[in-house]
Every structure is written in structure tokens, then in C-alpha cells.
Image 1: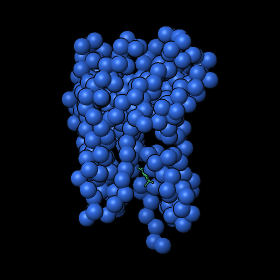
Image 2: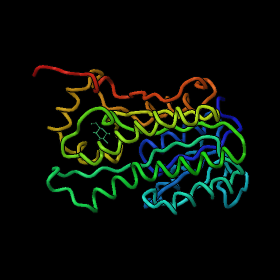
Image 3: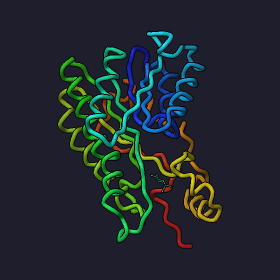
Image 4: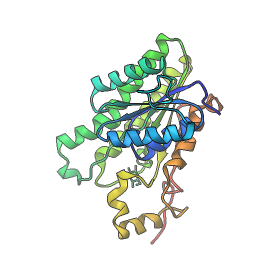
Length: 265
Ligand code: BGC
């Protein structure tokens, strides 16, 4: 097991890619903090799945449980700081931060409201920024190395009409990663982006229910299928492990070839 003895926090892990990452990190032996904003039942489901893998019990009955859920809105800096502090309190330390929580809002550019812009930027960029800062402060205080993995998107590179705030947030995440790779390298802290394409998760519910749009999207994916959360999670587990000690400041695409596909119709 690659992550025995490590403690990881995965933001937004009550569903989708975040839930897949929690399961994979737990399979590799890590203790994992599960975070949710508005789906406690999803967080409980993630926790139950962790327990099913490791036969570990829920925190309330077992203080040495390998799973722990915390409610926090990544769009609020005070809640983000509290989330990091609670995770450290619970497991005694943190080694791995997976900034997974993210939202998107569909609207043509000329109709985007300030509230929607703020919601997207606060969760996708500001929350990531300050979660990472609090994590780095903890590593500095305890004089330990650590690993930061951001779940970005193909849209840190690729335009996505009608999702401009989302693209801006992911482009910002790309530069956050590059900047921090340089600034944190001397501290033994690595930071990388995993950039999924179209993954079969709740963020894509609308698309999944629209056969015409789904067909057009599949036609653009050379591997001709949607990705699954485990396709993303396996790369995260690698980047979180010591096998990836020399890797920092990079983005890795998990998109079935979507990003570089150009076809004349
Ligand atoms: C978005 C999805 C989109 C996918 C591929 C992801 O970042 O969250 O809505 O389908 O990129 O375009």
C-alpha cells in the first residue's frame, strides 16, 4: 500500500470524482477526511464505502476510524480554515490535500450575474487558495513535506463557451500550481494539477440526460467514452505517493484524448 500512515483531506467528497478519490486513497492505506457542503447523505455513503473496503468503523463509535466527515463550504474562507484545523485535530496531522470541490454555472457571458461569478470563483479558486495556505502553514509548523493535488479541468486550457467564470477559475488554478511549485519546492511540498475531461458524475447530470449533446461530446473523445471517477483517482493516488516525489508544477490530463482532438466534421 502506497499511502500507509498518511492522512489526506479530499474536499467535495460526498459524490463524483471526490468520492472516487477518497476510496482510492483509502485503498492505498491512507486515513481520509471526507468533506461535504450540502449532501451529508453522500458523505455518509462515501464513509460507508471506505469502511466496506477497510472494515473500519465510523468515527463516532471508533476513534481510530479511517474515515471522518466534516461539513464546510469551500466558498467561505473561515470555513475552509476551520476544515483544515478540524482535520488536523481529528487525525493529528495532514500529509495530503486534494482540492477537489468545484462548481460550474451555465450562462452566456452577457448574462452572468455577480452572484454566480462569486459563487464559482469563491469555491474553485479562493477556497483552493486558502485551503492550500492553511495546509502549507501546518506543514511549515510541523516541519514536514506534503503533497497538494488540485482537481482542475481540461478547461484550464480549453475554452468552454457559456462557462467563462469556470474557465477563468481553472486557468487561475493552473497559475496557482506553477507559482507554488516554485515557492514551496524548498519546503519539500509538491503541487500538481489533475485535469479531467468529461467524467460521469453529478456535475454532468444535464449533459448525461441530453442524448444529442452527449453523442456530440462522445464523438469528440478519441477513446469514445466518458471517464469514470476511478480513472481520475488512480492518478491522484500516484501523485500523492512517494513514487511522485520528483513531480511538481505540472498538469496531467485525464480526458480520453479530448483536449487535443480536432476534427473537421
Ligand atoms: C466540466 C464538464 C465538462 C467537461 C468536458 C469539465 O471540467 O465540469 O461539465 O463536460 O469538463 O468539457
